[in-house]
Image (cartoon, rainbow, N blue to C red; front, top):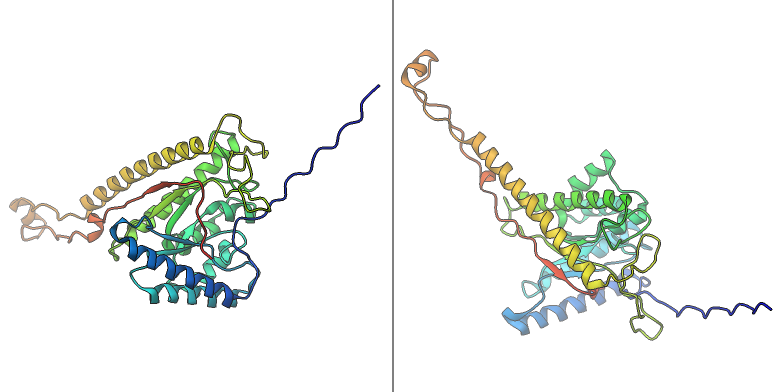
Length: 322
């Protein structure tokens, strides 16, 4: 006699670990301002030992109109400026559910709030738009408008159907996605390097990210919620979060170092092409009607581009601000 199948227990209730998306822009701005002031006070109290290098803000809501988002972000930039140098640099994340959830809206908002600085997490945009954003018009928008505004990267690879993957070698789809993401990060590094010609701060930082944690109704992290998942949502046996982050950080550092070497070689080539020509021998100069010297070209500052720095942080989760 066949035993009746037992019903599986219902999964534990889950909620988002992010702050509420509801409420008017004024309430979000008040909360953000209070938190930025608290961070500034803590940084001053810690002095040189302060561990806070940058503030990453989850800003606004995708439910707002573009006018509301622009007014909020302009006020957020003004609030950070008003707090002053006690506050570490603030960048606003391109996060689903937030004011910067869409690449096209973000580009328009950057035109309206040119002082806005970004934390770029391309995985959110790839999932939201369900494509790799690699057509010529999309590339033009990302490279021309977004990359110059990026100060921090969340270095997480995703696909149009998955915001994160545990292994870059998981499948051919993942490998192609990884190349697309590395290309975007290299574009952001190049934009930061170009920015160093006109700004004293050319540092662009990165956080290797996997998460966030899933929380139960009691606010506690659910068991297993940090285990990396494959493309089918299954836990990867034997692969823990720390191993996933360590591998991703090593791969990102290797790619950055490769890019830095190629960038330095390109600068040397440009410098060689812009260097003054050596004087021609008198006989050749006379034959060419010259007066013995080449038409020297002054070497531009681009040949002596500032240092590019990328720091890598490993963390189980980042506490989002506002």
